[in-house]
Image (cartoon, rainbow, N blue to C red):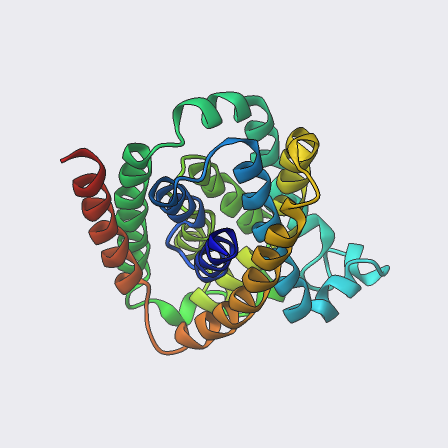
Length: 267
């Protein structure tokens, strides 16, 4: 029963934080330390709950993902295309592949997460400050994003390789800085997350799948389902939130969480 409760808790945390600019990896590391989750089974569990979150985005944007498999989906002059998605993910995938072992070994701790939370929060504040007063100039439709803007968002995504920085936080902030509206930046962030996370999760899953046994499957299934439903509603809520509010509240939450994390683990 305790394992099932842990699965529900971790599924909720993943679903709530994966697509918000607060760092799901950072939250998962903190929660993992609090719940005593470690080892290969914990690694696989993290992957499964992330896959649940990925599936929720595919459901929300199913028409657009279907379009990527058509001829128009490959034409960069007819709206957001496969090439725009590739521009946002290929550079960071290459860097992540090269630095995977180093990142896993040295950057997955509450201390490094706290640093990432603060720096990522400051980046969100900077992005909001740079765009204040020129909202009318920003690209407000994801289909109007240029390849150059997509590539720059991908460059900002390098920051997310530091746990706690947040993939969605770095890309949404980067999108604002290069001229996208909050809504366009968020939608593009969610879309590029799917292939990027799918590749990363598959890589992690293949490395750790042999350590699973049949008893683990029920726990993994619970985490997957909970993460799917929570992430689904989290994304829909966040898109509505961005129509009325800016990202400053998330920045302050990140900074507060960083101080609480440092106090809890190191003081």
